[in-house]
Image (cartoon, rainbow, N blue to C red; front, side, top):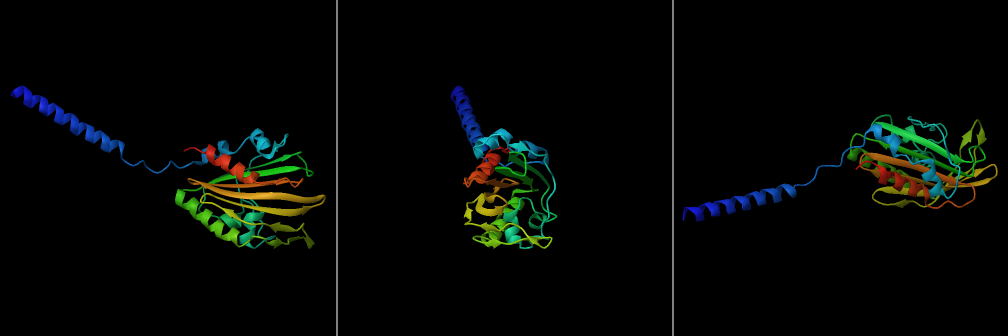
Length: 228
């Protein structure tokens, strides 16, 4: 009788332990780890990766920058400024974001380039802060679709610029645009993505009219390579 009670006690202990383990395994995981500033350089694609996406060779990367540009004097319309250029101070603001890494690549590496890509990553102190900027950008971009932009510099008009239709998902915005150049027309796409606490800002252009979704592809590849 004593032996039966002992065995029953052991069995009960095993059942209780099993329930405890099951409860621990079912516990929800915490929020994804935040991407720090020290991970931003590694997040950008290599020239070889960009060559593959753009269907070209010889992309040359320029030195990376870690500060915003400010072209509000040329284009004060913030709804269009964020489409016109990557990493604009007037769009991102002085506060809120932590750090950025931006890189320009082109082939050939001259003012007569045929293919150009600007890729950028900007980290925020939280996923909510990055999402807030993304949502704000979605609202702004929606107000600059099928829009003509005329910019004057030193009393001289710059080449005309026209945006297309906005494509939007939960994690990415993309929009095509064209602009004049001395030899014809640049065909470009802009893409803005959000992944955890990082905003991904990309521009891709060609001068042969072949641009499609390459900026969005670059942004997706960057997002996939971020620490998770």
